[in-house]
Length: 234
Image (cartoon, rainbow, N blue to C red; front, side, top):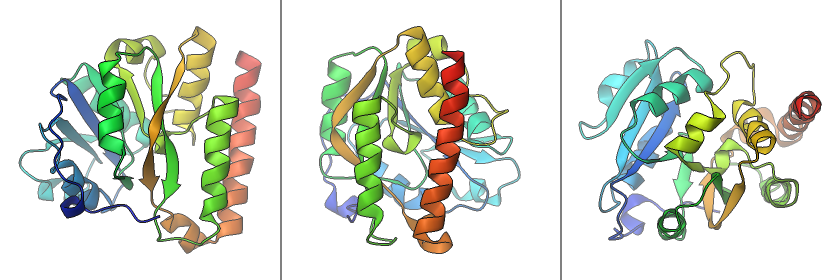
């Protein structure tokens, strides 16, 4: 599935002035540029925060209307820094290689209008920069999120800042799966998971670079190991 570019995603006149979009950027990862182009086409403009790893020279090239932060490398550190700096009542946590599809923005606005408690999440699709087998990965991710209540961070978590406070900060001590751990915390404290009836795309380039089977099995192994650990804490 190909994510539409900014020119193909017309502005939508919705009220999102109380929304902060937080995008952690890995060292040297330039995928954020295309996402920023899409977000620049939204009307009215939400607050957009790019959180770069300390020392990443890319931070000097961000657009002037985007808030730029630096934090120690690692998604947990960077997400925590972005949340602490956010002005919005609502937080949208995006991966740098996320891409909005035609239904994403309006569905997000409808979701926020209902002022739901908990963590909102989107259906997942993959862009066409990876193997065709990624359709199976998307199917599995959406099935896991819907029937097991375990969406992952590439499904674009949306939550009120009060709920973010209840969940506490992301754990920078984890080697992987900080978003997965947050979902388990939500289950433990009774915070609901709220599906949003729209799709968010993410890049499949890592599967193309490292091989579909190898990458898929690695993700499954790490997810299962973390799920076993988290389930013991429940």
